[in-house]
Image 1: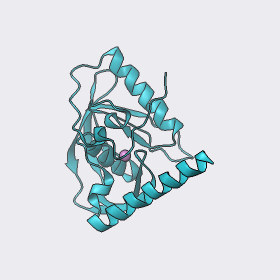
Image 2: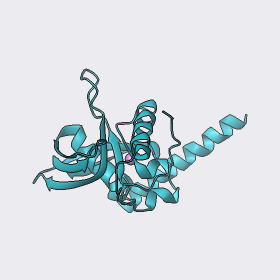
Image 3: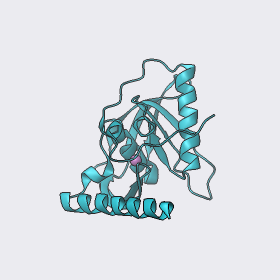
Image 4: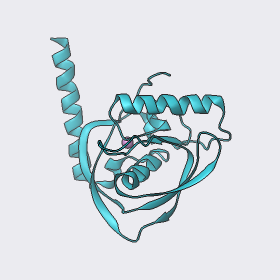
Length: 175
Ligand code: NI
């Protein structure tokens, strides 16, 4: 097991389209385990291949609440096959856009089809936080970030805020 480096904006790997995985090899299984370990270590609820520099259609998530048992999910080539008629607004963040949050409109529930780490095709109806997470993570695989859902003004404000904080933290580290 190994913790992986998480790429942050404006790294171009976050804007590229990830390639389908042809077979669930031991290397893919290892990568999924490392992604899950990295996600837990950074207190994230989801992580996509692009975010660790792997342009493969891989996603890990765990959206279980604090009082629930862990629900680690490893997905290979996930696809949303059904969407709710209703939308919900949810305050989202992203490990690649650290400590910045904004409201994004998403489907209330989705049905996701994916291959698991044993090579078995599965379907899961995702509701609540998991539904948000599935939509957010699958977009990563197409180079889309949650900030793309914001108005240009809100997006530029958020990015400037992040850049300002980075500069301040870099200065503090120099002192
Ligand atoms: Ni994200």
